[in-house]
Image 1 (cartoon, helix red, strand yellow):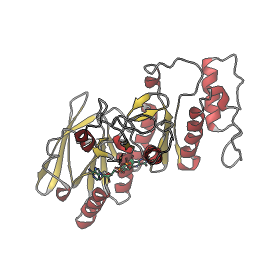
Image 2 (cartoon, helix red, strand yellow; image 1 turned 135 degrees about the vertical axis):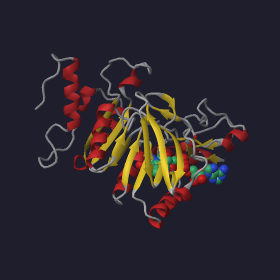
Image 3 (cartoon, rainbow, N blue to C red; image 1 turned 30 degrees about the horizontal axis):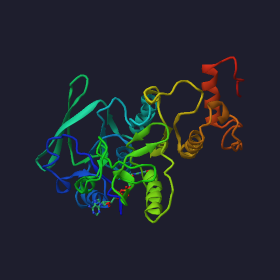
Length: 331
Ligand SMILES: Cc1cc2nc3c(=O)[nH]c(=O)nc-3n(C[C@H](O)[C@H](O)[C@H](O)COP(=O)(O)OP(=O)(O)OC[C@H]3O[C@@H](n4cnc5c(N)ncnc54)[C@H](O)[C@@H]3O)c2cc1C
């Protein structure tokens, strides 16, 4: 048996979220059914504006999608910057991109309630630091604030879960019950640098599913582990990351060894950020040092880059900052 029940969208404690639904213009976005419901909402009645609660990658993609349909979007995020999976300095670039395309970005703002008034929706919240009130009257509210593992079936069956509610699996995707495997958004993620964590991504789900399926019929394949590699397109910009960030490195026991542990990038679509991050992911997967990144034989042609790829230039810049006397400067 392979359990692959996926995840369910988290429902933040917003008053009204349980009372209103797609017929009122209040939506979650997780399934194809949710997509069809949103399409129905924006095509079957006039929708001039929308509030998106959450500025993770799905919220950002939806800001672009609704803007493309001439809907005025307000994007609300309770954390200090959008796209909290990258450092705030990079999140700021993404926020600027949203604003350039007319999105009203409200960070450090937490939504507390939604109510229906005179046929429209009124969203109430407050700034998390100043407590200044946030009120917006709108036609559509989209709540996209992450997911949690869907493990009700597994729990009822007695399959052991982690403290965060994901199915406990080993690297062979075996659960704690004999002959029962599990994969995807319902299981914990074995991370190559962090150990056990929860990182629901389609790329990871595909790999875990392949391992679980093969082993369920007698194979011995091992899930190599995730690096949380991900990319998101926001209008003309792409943001991507792989590996871990500064604040994760020290608690995970990493000192300054020179090993490449994480890379984050933001760039225009034409700069192929999503593929450059894959070079970084490959380097981290093979435990290269930052110095060794400069040795990689990466391609070069003047219209598309320079002899040192931007990843190598960044590696050299980093190395110069850490040990200025040992690293030659790059052009
Ligand atoms: C809008 C959106 C955009 C995304 N974009 C990206 C992206 O760009 N890149 C990326 O890597 N990931 C992305 N993801 C995440 C990706 O979709 C998931 O990580 C992936 O689908 C997980 O696969 P899964 O098979 O574990 O779960 P799912 O695809 O969720 O499938 C689980 C299925 O099990 C069914 N199920 C649950 N319980 C039962 C039961 N008791 N009986 C029968 N069936 C049951 C569910 O209905 C569901 O259809 C995105 C997700 C969303 C919602």
